[in-house]
Length: 250
Image (cartoon, rainbow, N blue to C red; front, side):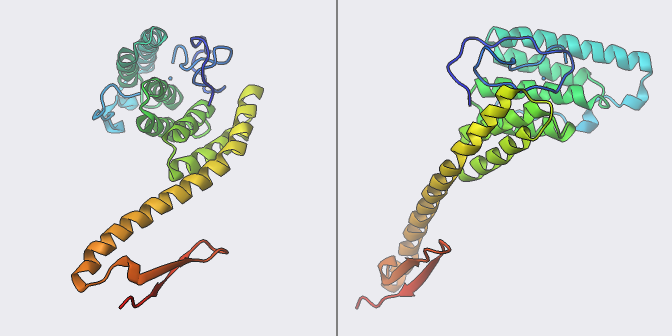
């Protein structure tokens, strides 16, 4: 993930889901897209479901166009807040854009969600950002910016499962035709970096799990005058699996 750069630029093209945003590299594309991209304002906040948005079939073409213009105006306001580091305020505007935007405009709605995720990344709310990116990807499955941002969030979460999913996202982004050379190189770097991280984290989580199981086992076995010391665990070097053998300590 890119880091330690100058303030991000704010100049993506209108209603575009091409290009990749890196979190802190001022020489690359911006973190939010202009007019028509969204992190959560409050930890417990949930976004409205699809049936709570405007039903496009109830409006004329002129009304739908007006609603989209209004959504873009909210987005522009959100971008201005984002540029000032006012991330909660930016999220509020992107959410307003979601409510104003016709449901049929899935590409624009995906951008709003992705911009929310950009704010969440800035707030170090990586789990929320990952989930918000997934909402964008559901609407636009090949939205490279949202997929890349989800990969960044997963790498920050740094659990075994999150790192594994992040690697898959980086690989997916690299195969898309609309990304920049810079983004492709960043994905390649991640593909080289993550496998060892995934392996190390997997071993760490396995050891933590075994420690918890041992504590639980001692609690239960103590009732019978036994402990986990009565059991030997042997690891199969070929598979990494464990077998348990009883040892009479009496």
